[in-house]
Length: 177
Image (tube, rainbow, N blue to C red; front, side, top):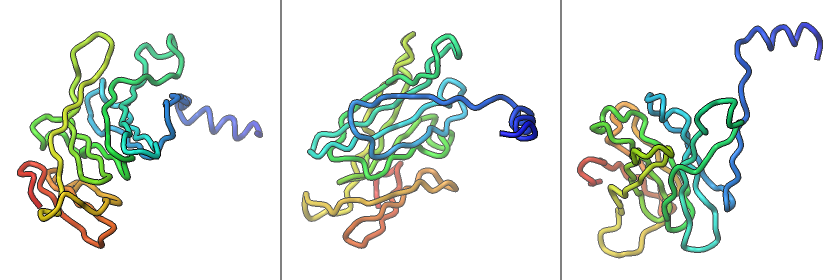
């Protein structure tokens, strides 16, 4: 790199850090948290890809203390998820959800999870399934969901797409399509 490039790189502010986390399985999906709370800003939800029904979602966070602990991430929470998550996203605005920090996942159904701080000094989190949404009312079978997205204008709405060619808009608060 030339001296000119070094000067430009150093004048752009603090250097970006590279963080590492070794998951116990192949990763298939991930999403950054959107909360403005400083203790929640550096959270990443990751979904497994295991070729079986039993899969998992982990929420990893940056170790506190900056340089004292290196650039490592740690597992703050893990919960079971049937099938790999085809997509995983945090709610775009927790203020509209009554302060809840919601995480949505898709696979066979749309699942909404409420993630809370467990008030321990270890920085771990708790998760609770808030909703299990299925558009097929006539059968337990449902066509796998391929994707979804939160509505940023109204975070109470989530749109899903499925391999059966349907798109469904869900109201998270009423759990209806």
